[in-house]
Length: 248
Image (cartoon, rainbow, N blue to C red):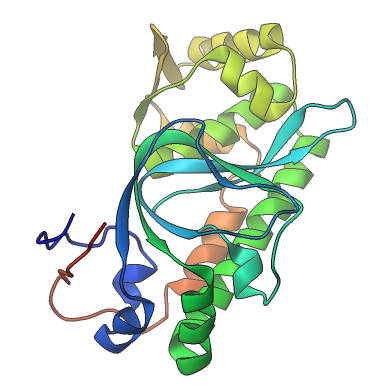
């Protein structure tokens, strides 16, 4: 939207210097609609998205021909990590799940910008490492946790990105976790009976975040702590809230 000067809500963009942001320009602000594909498995990355609002799911094909979620991306991160790693594509697909907005950058521009800026390269590589830990933690959770605990962890991760109240359907959650809808329904009922969440008309409200976290038996928090370790000490912030011209 030419002429606007929005504040970056994306945590990665907000850490970049003016010089680095100029290397990424011209930036494009775009709407993210549910189910839009941001990245398709085994195809070259067409655009890299720095999510400002909403969230996306990174999914892998399962052995039965369905999909299973392996990671979440919200305003803390970016898509297109294969570009950061110097590759052209990924075996995973990325879809918008929570409507919102993002800043879009062309892959070739990102590659050149990273070559020109060591701080930018380090920031994005650290995020890539943090995301790989999230993927590994998800794989561990899928193999070791009860379904109720997996649902609890997922709700906490979405809550980190959308707030303590958000819309979700049992069908969608079942697809993301590669389980039956009836199992998700029972898991949500169990969490509600424990006083950890409240559900109403497709909306989930986290009512006891500490209790919900404890219920995951340590599965939630591993990736989140690593994100803080890897990126929390990076000195890429500015003194004043940054406002940048963003075009379409």
